Length: 138
Picture 1 (tube, rainbow, N blue to C red):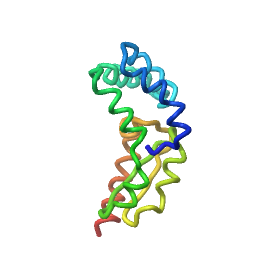
Picture 2 (cartoon, one colour):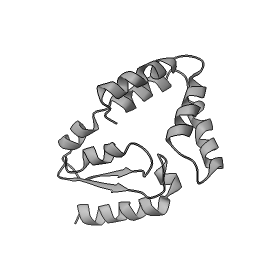
Picture 3 (cartoon, helix red, strand yellow):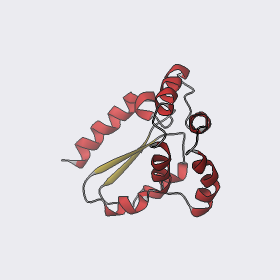
Picture 4 (cartoon, rainbow, N blue to C red):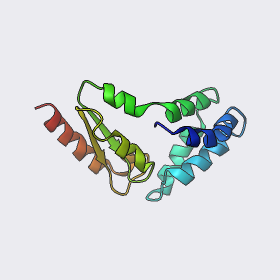
């Protein structure tokens, strides 16, 4: 996710707190407020348990990598067929910013799914993957 400097600056204090003992609470707050889980609260809790079981030394570097990765540059450089699937809930400008950047990059968006779209809407994801494979490799 390529964030503008202002957004990254606003997130910096929170991300810096991920280095401490409260990281699990911060992850729970971020995930519950930004990623959904509305359709299956039990699945959401399982995901949160797995995420908060991640060793402390992994979390800060992973989050910084996610928030500072230059997705548009990667898409522009892509020379092979690729599929980017976006959730309905999330950062809407991410999908718009990637469309049309790479000649071989296809984009799709699920309906009614959040960040864990492969778990929340597997039928949609499978259909888009099958279509991508038919269109991109024929």
